[in-house]
Image (tube, rainbow, N blue to C red; front, side):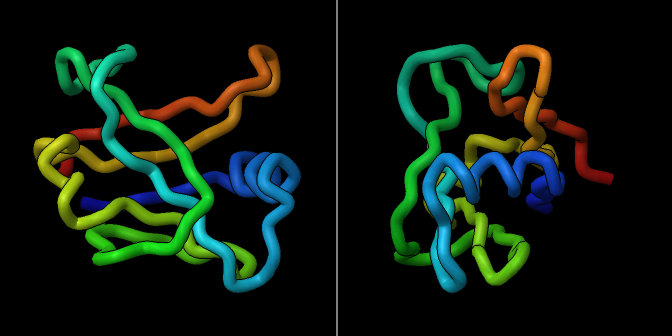
Length: 98
């Protein structure tokens, strides 16, 4: 699974979580919500340290990651995290892995 975070999303997280160099942003699976790839599950966001990283990307010395135990959720999809300026919210874009 490949994880990407757009620059505008990274800036949003930096402001929202007051991120410093060496910090972490965790995308985790939660029960409930809406997802186009999993029924009854969605992604949540927290600002905590990893246990066992399954996928990650580092931007400006901040690590964005998904735990290995949550990789099942993506079922062969790549995750792009973006920020929608018009709606002022994070958007998840899932692309089928090739």
